[in-house]
Length: 281
Length: 314
Ligand SMILES: Cc1cc2nc3c(=O)[nH]c(=O)nc-3n(C[C@H](O)[C@H](O)[C@H](O)COP(=O)(O)OP(=O)(O)OC[C@H]3O[C@@H](n4cnc5c(N)ncnc54)[C@H](O)[C@@H]3O)c2cc1C
Image 1 (spheres, rainbow over the protein chains, first blue to last red):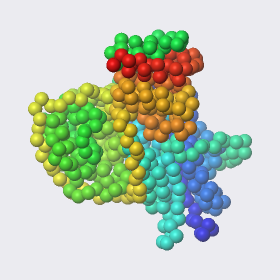
Image 2 (cartoon, helix red, strand yellow; image 1 turned 45 degrees about the vertical axis):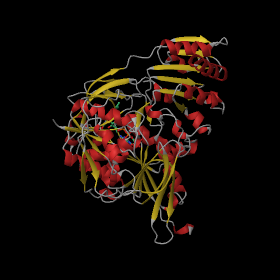
Image 3 (tube, chains in turn purple, brown; image 1 turned 120 degrees about the horizontal axis):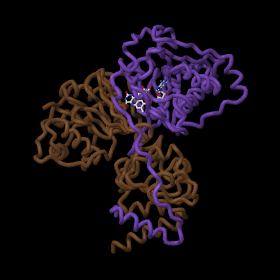
Image 4 (cartoon, rainbow over the protein chains, first blue to last red; image 1 turned 120 degrees about the vertical axis):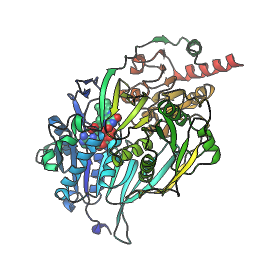
């Protein structure tokens, strides 16, 4: 029955990343990314939309559901949380600490794991769902969701292209069901809550923040946490605490435009001439 | 010499090119060994031996059909048994996730998107959608490295080895999602997109008709790719998508047909050796990175090129 659905507590991971529309640069002794002109990672909008839809299907905030947008990053990373609040997240958490810059995926997942626990029940519990993007648009490693699942011992459904939460009528259990498209096959998956899900850009169409959402976001709270709040030793994060390090970086020589011709009716033949000259056929 | 453990998850023969590349890289770093999450047939073992593999680690029983967690538990056990100098995996989403979890289990750093691994285990990595190259190192634990396809030319060993099977009791995977259904995709007979040496990709400009793209791909022995616009429109299956949220490819030749070349699309293909672009719009951003560009109609250029190749071959 509809009215017996228990509310969900959902944490959505949102990353603040340099806008890929502009040139991006690695610089400084740690070869870190210049983070001016940063935005909410486009792929995390799908994660947020998925979380909002799941909560709304169960009556939204009024029915006791919770959608928390969580980010780890410098001062300006709070903008990723604010955008998420404007889109409809109910509350925000921002982990900001001077020791964090240069953290690799392992250190990031260590901090996020502690923060996910902190966001629900002050460190003791787990949310019903952690929802993440399939990949950041800067580091692009896709390591964080799986590492978080490992650290929190959550069932993991990554790269979901369809997602639903289903109440099992028999035993009151709530399960998440999803579809994942691999190279040579497509799978359906099922896990009991609590679980971690990462979603692809096939999962939904993210909403835009509207005027009402933008005004409402001003009244929502963003909790700022430090490593001390999370009980994490600063030596475990940042460049020194990370398990990987960047020794050097260099821009690839930019591809320069080559020959461009306009088809006069023989361009197909010209193409084959070109391929032959390049020994590609 | 220390071993280098390669995670290979293949159902049978032929060994995919990406796997042969991993074995070739491993042989340059140490003694290649393989961790296979399923028991291998003797002929697969022999094929691995041809690449110098001395030991193959397999799970004692059949791994539970759960997502990623069981494979990660098995690989971590194999690393504990083999004590390798490094662990290599492919760069597919699933391989990267196995690497991610193994990294946490073993307190080991993970580096993704590697294009080369030096004898001192420093890793050359392609970053920011191929616009930067960086050199990274793992500074904790056994380096876990996922390597992009087409990074080296695969080569068998001078002298084949006879791999020894080592069966492992596998640790409990922990909470995991169960696979409740699986549908195989239709096999096209074309090479796998992520390892293809030639790719012909179509976009919005193909207007619902991928025939000319497929025909040119077939005469070139290549794979068919697509932009997100084309897969979203349902003209071709989603797994053909190249780009930020699709596959990243680095073929010898990439032919882009009717694709504008938005940043997310370029991200997936700018490490291709040679890029050819065909587009009606002379201002399409794809021309900024094309080695050879044709401003023209895909429906006359592609078929003419296909026909010309056939003519020269006969
Ligand atoms: C160019 C470059 C290359 C890198 N290569 C490596 C590498 O090989 N190995 C390595 O260990 N680290 C690497 N890093 C560091 C790593 O990117 C960062 O530690 C990052 O915070 C986490 O990984 P990711 O950006 O790849 O995220 P991904 O794992 O790709 O992100 C997936 C999802 O996790 C969530 N998420 C990730 N980070 C955060 C965050 N800070 N706050 C909230 N949610 C988040 C988001 O939902 C995101 O969509 C690299 C960084 C850069 C800039």
